[in-house]
Image (cartoon, rainbow, N blue to C red; front, side):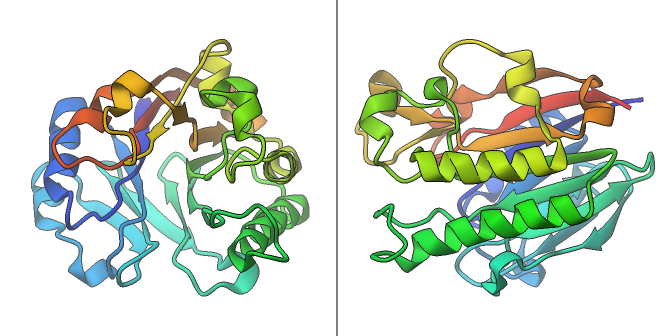
Length: 262
């Protein structure tokens, strides 16, 4: 039975609850994974989501920053959360659907502004986080799993508006791309979005700093949908809802969708 999954860095679920409700009403994903919820779980306004049929909600919350949650119309059982790199941050939650598929929802650290771990502790934390993801996937290779989230790295040259200009900008530096690739390879993860849309510029994030983000179109593909090889061929219909970035008081990220026939 097919199900549609979406991932979206919401940049405060309490502030942007109306946008989440609008997306759920318009697109009806079976599963919505949110990042940067910026709220303890007990303070997330769940009533509206439940009224739309999203009765199954799991997550990890933090006051004011980080936070991940999974809203689902399908029964989902929480199967754990890992504090990679020992940061004591709410950046990962995993749940298992009734068909046995495990969904991992990640919010990888952004890494600050300076791409040097000696000058910038946050950049080192980001690399350490990715290294521990890699090691975890090596130690326990995932099966029948989907990994989604704001991974805060645009890995390909056509995942950014200008490859050469962004080579020294956090989110597209070679060392970050290398670390993300190592984590992806360790789990055998297939990039579903690029499997479906293999060519061309593709973005899911546009900075708030641009006065006219759409006209400037200086985007990056920071949000990802991956799947393990045993179910990757079941993934299809990938799309990024660019128009959502233009909604009133938006997140700087747009939702990324994929459908799985499982």
